Image 1 (cartoon, protein in one colour):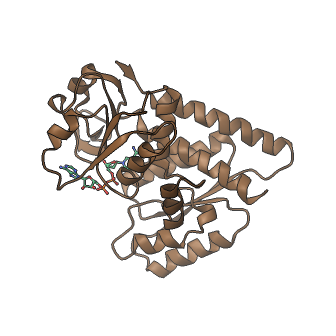
Image 2: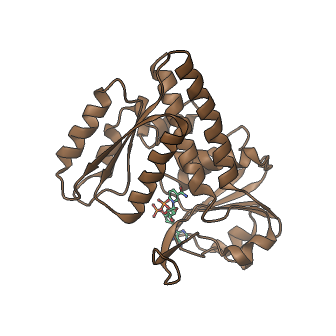
Length: 292
Ligand code: NAD
């Protein structure tokens, strides 16, 4: 069994963009600028945004963090995004999800200029991805693809089962694994909360992507020998032995599933780190495309 190590691969990706950013700087070109908006102070969202800002600093990007109160009117966030859309120095915009109930996520995502949509959530980016056109791929699926590529995991002709069909993980990774390219060329089954016989379907899978947000959901009896397992889940579970009071759990019962796998991602230390690396790659590409 080989661990698909998010620490190693994300560092490799970040080293590449760091080098490229250094080259931009040394030739007098504009370097990337990522603007993040955080509404409220949800613990998990704070952690994600802090990691993104830290990665920008490590790589040499400019970062701007805009913090807004949890009870703001939707119009306040709209105004903040419109300002960032119009700001020539800003190459990428991310709005940390989830947003408070009074704000429509759909409306906000649609408002981000597609040229600055480094999270890859805008319908324009999603549509281009479906058609196989160059675009910003959503960060988590893009990170998974980079990880499979790094470890040269064979995907052609394999049966991939994706558990979860959200717009940010399940659906896009199912499309990318199905593309006529590498990694891709899988026959993909997308499962969701209404799928009967999930265990039987998973047992037929060469590759399983678990993205449902149910800690320890994928158990050893659902996985065939030598399967590749990608665990996207991140759930905070109360744990008195930790200083923070919680542990991060994936969707896979790692201890029992790992011995059956050819490759598996750990949680933490797997897909989460790749998501940030992919965001950094998208931000670099946004900067270069915008300032040609
Ligand atoms: P979501 O809640 O939007 O979607 C969950 C999906 O799982 C839905 O399509 C639902 O139909 C399906 N599902 C729920 N229960 C199921 C069941 N019992 N059987 C089969 N399918 C079921 O979640 P999301 O935004 O896609 O996130 C999924 C998980 O991935 C969460 O734990 C989230 O925190 C995590 N996540 C991690 C990263 C990362 O960087 N590692 C990024 C995004 C999301």
